[in-house]
Image (cartoon, rainbow, N blue to C red; front, side, top):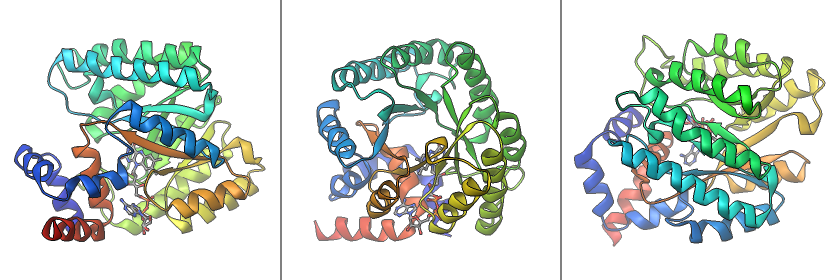
Length: 307
Ligand code: FAD
């Protein structure tokens, strides 16, 4: 019950101000956000890679309101590419982007987001890595998929995310499970109405498995974004049945969540990528992590009281 309330709060400016100023917030945020600056996150990238893991880096931010902010988002990612170039990690360090941060919701936003994200995808390709387009709320997805298709004409390795909780996703998965397409499947993290999304967690899990099967049996590159032990075991079994080798799919989990599992899967020979978010505009990302596991909220409230 708490999850939807927290997700509603994630859209409120008043709550944003309250949470950002609350004592103890920084400590809890640092569990999920790897740092506020590029200088703080680079050593974490190095450590993660040294453990035999890979990363996808996300500069946090969304729901921007001006074209200048969208340009600043593009520049933040270009600066990240400059740092990754020095580390010379190739595809071991890729990037995840939210198109809302590139201006998608502004007037003329579809074209603006495409114009801002293209140089980032180009710069990533020049250093031998890739970009994955995150999935946001359902109203943004037609535009996201169209941008994905457009980018893939020149950069076929560009990935995208699909969300098992949406009714539309089984069809999206059938379209995307081909032609080397890199597709991350996740349960879905936004507050969506019953007209477009399953509300029952068991229904979401069942849809996740059906979609996984489509991705595994297709000839794209599935990226399994989940911490759910049951779904991870099912993924392994479906990959085996589809005759996929270990380098023909990968697991992805979030920084700060089930770190032991990151290492276990890597030790089994799986490619395991850690979604590593950093930056100052962490509020929306942080609130979605609280909503996923209400016990995090109790921990957060306790840290405010004991400060
Ligand atoms: P759950 O059933 O939610 O969790 C399984 C177990 O994992 C829990 O019992 C708990 O032990 C642990 N766990 C899960 N979440 C947390 C948490 N926040 N704190 C502590 N423990 C936790 N969603 C989108 O809508 N769009 C995206 O682009 C997107 N990208 C993602 C990228 C990656 C790599 C991952 C892993 C997730 C992404 N998500 C995205 C979020 C996703 O939709 C889910 O909300 C999130 O992964 C929780 O679902 P789960 O599959 O881990 O299963």
